[in-house]
Structure formats: C-alpha cells, structure tokens
Length: 89
Length: 267
Image (cartoon, rainbow over all chains, first blue to last red; front, side):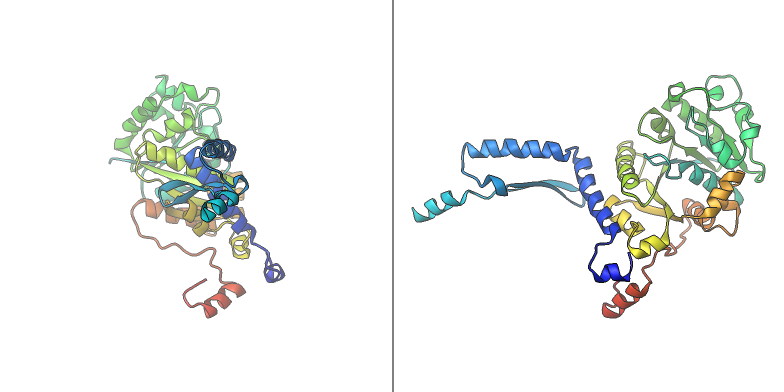
C-alpha cells in the first residue's frame, strides 16, 4: 500500500486480514460456524414471535469475544407498531 | 543431564516447522548444548535432508520402537557439530506405527544423554501431532503472517492447552518487514492480539534459508543470515536468557515518523 492509496483512504490489506481472522476465530473457538448461527437466529425469531412481535429484519445475533469470555449477543428490536400501540394505550 | 523436550508444531503445513527444528538444533548445539532432533513425520521424512544427513541413515524411529535396533544405532551424528544428532522418521510406514506412549518411552531413554530433545511434528492435528506433543515439556508453535496459518495456530494452541503442556510459545516465521511496513502483511503485534500467546521469536523471510536448505546446511550456521540470527536468539530464549526482540517491522517509514510527531508515544 503506497502513499496515494493511503491518501485515498484505502484500507491496508493487513487490517482486512486481522478483521477476517478475528471473526473466523470467534466462530472457531465457539464451534459455531456462521451458517449455524443463522439457523439459531431463525429458531430464536420463531420462538420469540410466538410471544412478542419483533422487527424481524433488524434482529442481529453475533458472537463476540473479550479476553477469555465468548458471548452470544442478540439485539432484538420490537416491532414498531406494537411499541406505538402500547405507548398510546 | 536431563534433557528438556521441545516439540515444534503448527497445524498448517509449509510454515517452516522442519526448518525451525533444524535451525534450533544447530543453534543450540553451537551454543554448547547436546541436542537430538527427532523427525516425527512418519512416512514423510524430511528433517534429514534439511540437516544434510540423508546419506547417513541406516535405522529410523520405527526401527527403535519395534526393537530392530538399539537407540544408539539410530542416532545420526551431525557432520559439522559434534553435539548434534538426528533420529530420522521411517519413510515407508505411517503414523499408526508409533503411539504417544512409544514417543514418551524413546524420549525417556534419550533424556539422560542430552540437554535438549527437539521433536519436529507433522502438520495436522491427528495421530502424528499427538505423538509429537506427548513427551513435550515445551511446545513451540510456528506460524506465518497469514490468515490461514494463524487460524490453524489458534486451533493448535487450544489442543496443547487441553493437554496441559503449559503455555505454548509462538514463532512467527517468514515475516517480510517491508510488506508489514506497507500495511500489506499482518504484523507480529496483530498476530499476538488475536492469539494471546507468548512470543519466543520472529524470523524474517530470508533467501539464505532456501540456499541453506538446498545445501543441507541450516541457515543458523551462516553468520550473514538474518533468519539464522533469529533462530539463534530463539535458542537463547529457550534457555531462559532474556534476549530483547529486535523490531523487524517498526513502522518507521514516513507515516510512522509523522504519526509520532502528531501523537508522541504512538505509532
């Protein structure tokens, strides 16, 4: 990567390598490949939807790692219509 | 004498395990230690050619294990260093000819006569790897600054920790400092960030290693070789010496200097 590439704000390929590595290692260490995580997400949505209305498109499930602790992080926004109804009621 | 046992492993093939084993053997023996290198790659014998001893082989590791020769008969003395020996792998057998218990037994018999036993592990995580790691009290993991090699190193670290071998140490091999400076190769710092493991050496890419391998004379014997120097330093660290890490890849280009001016202590 040369001076001009940096000026244009291009990402060093080493940074891309590091990011990809970190992601793949999180999945390796948890023994939960991305495809399985997707299946888990679908199951989770199906289960939650039986109880509460959620904004399916914005659901975000991911694996994270800080030091030695692996974490499954789920961000599940509720459906906007329901939130409004509850607020109005 | 009671030898310490170091196994050199990696998971991924082609990262330089055999080269590292040969060079560490040479470096340790040059420093006055009695060393035996064992080729643990049964069926794909290679350490003999890297050490330049291929023409002296009569017996091999499997011959010892199956009782066809005495331990002493299978020890090949190095051409250049009087304190360096090799036990070659069998070429016509496979990994199942050896068990972890066999390795532990052979190493136990070698222990009284040596300061260091170095075991060159085969690639992979199966039987051959388990054989190589079984007798180890120090595991050195070799990786390259590449996504695939670092990923495999992480897997190996997990397996070694599960075997309760104590924390393994990392050798980053074939680093190209110019590419690291340009931001086109993972730096040693990047690798340590993701692996969380103690570093024992950083070996630069060095054409002398290729020439040395062609000639069967490990680069650690060549005072001009940068890789050879790195291996000699690793050998000193293996013996508990505190050898500072030379920065091969400091970002001391134009941008390094600029960012330090802007942000003292940074870069």
